[in-house]
Length: 40
Image (cartoon, rainbow, N blue to C red):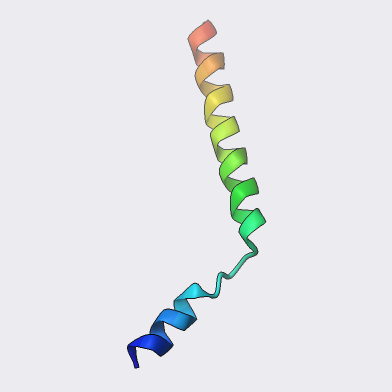
């Protein structure tokens, strides 16, 4: 029973590269906002 639960968790709702793209976009946005606010 535990093995079945572990197998279902391993299935990602999105492909792995989608998480990478989303993470990269979020970090880029935060870096952009930080640098932009720092300039003022």
